[in-house]
Image 1: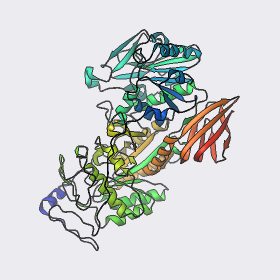
Image 2: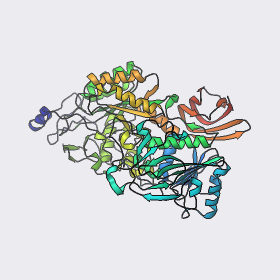
Image 3: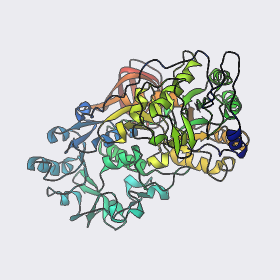
Image 4: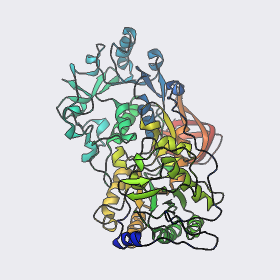
Length: 623
């Protein structure tokens, strides 16, 4: 995301002056590139190694009780990892199997990526066709054959690439909550793409449709069969989820930032509705700490000469208000086309003051290059002060690498903050290279905020894949930007629009990351104060590190439910301690007991634990 425009006096200064930096223990001058040198500082000494991709194994998701959703993987050479990450994000317990008999032991089964005689034997197709009549819920994706048309309630399939959106019928019980225009109509491909849009299956003569494509064919069918239901999706859910998660939306997003773009969220919420409707014992994971309706992260990009000084005013307000924010600091020790040096002898005290106030310090690169996404990966041996990236202009950055930007910025921030670990990263201008996930992992980061929510087609967190591809996952989690301060009108005049977006996300536990450049205070600081005051009572506020720790631990939680007489016995496996985890309970149930004993609060349909770890047993009884 761009920083403020370079003023004319700075351009003039770049032409006529050479920087001389002097201060106490710092040496001063590099006549070639105007580099600020910290005396005696050199590193990092270790080497960053980017490991080769390790393709994900569906067998790693094989275990689980019959209370989970079963994902019947009909073709392992598919984008199934997108479905996995989507189900994890929305909090649906699931397991994967290739055995249709095992899948049909569950009450809710999703067959992915297709149902047809090409991928399933006749006995599997026959067993699936009988499943809904026995009270099961069958979710088919790209139902293209196998004599299943009647089961799913349509006559024929029309495959094509010219469909660009789907419209939900909000009179259907599962879609009733999608009442906002941007929820009711969601795009699936760029309307300018003509016949080259994403492939889809339109279901003809559907008896009931939850959603229809723009050509009138059914995009998602709904068909009651006996005591159960059969649903058919006409898009590849895994591929479409990865379109957003991998930042490959290619014109699908309706706007870049600062607006509501719930495309993937609508589909995930629909899947959760299907699961909870089909599994009366469903327990799902909440998306926000403490069971609040909204998670909000206030973040600042410190990438301008005055920003470090101004950051103190923001941080002092935040600390007085009991808030903690994340400060993405550019380690700018080279003078170039972008700006003067500001990571100099004054920076350590400024960083330490922010930390003393409880703020998270994160990396915003060294060069803040407009072409960061085009830089070479690098060797992993880059070291300060030898690493001296130079931004010549908007299109040209010299002597810079992706690993260098990550390694050196983190090293310098940590050098001046002893015993502190930098774990979060945001690139300048939100330039997002395909190698970023694995490069972040190689250089010790854990969390990324490198894209907008709109471009990701989601206002929920998600896990990044290696190479922004489909086959291998990384250990990095992405928290996309929802509001930023550079569009018109000015940020201080956009409080109502920001609160409207917060209201939308509060309906389903969304994440709202706010990006404010502290290049000025004024209306931007006033925006933050008004925004926080309006949301303080209903939103969770924290740093990216805090939310990331919650999300990583949440991703590891396993939920299994078994019915015993009139009770539901819930077994939670919590490998990593987590604070404030919320669980959505089945309708009409409450927590009767928890072992071992621990603090929790419950309200209608939800229980929130102060702290969870290890193996926990919970008994639910009817109200």
